[in-house]
Length: 137
Image (cartoon, rainbow, N blue to C red; front, top):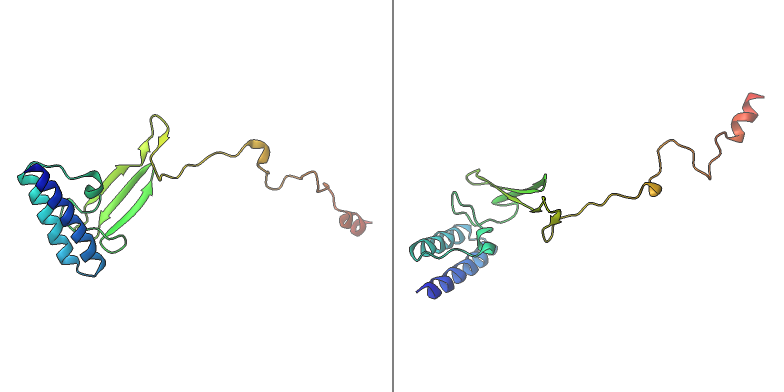
């Protein structure tokens, strides 16, 4: 029974994706509700990739920019449902170990020798320009 439930959940999420892409968002939401009910009835956890596709508050199938807004800040991904307003925050990586998750942007500091100071003369620029000397005298 558990294997059948998993197959039906996968089929329902595939249908939800197809219908949401076709413009039938209400039907996609219904498929998400059915998939969640099957998982609850047969005590089957949804796969992690499915858990990222819907709102836990209103069971809306998420389409980026249409039904969900995603923001990245302070090592977290914050997703806000545009239907019910529920916010879902997930970490982007293991910050304690310094390991970024897959797809997380990594920022590296440039070596100090490559950094030019603004306003400081470089080796190519003389400190005084010859034009300034001609105007003074």
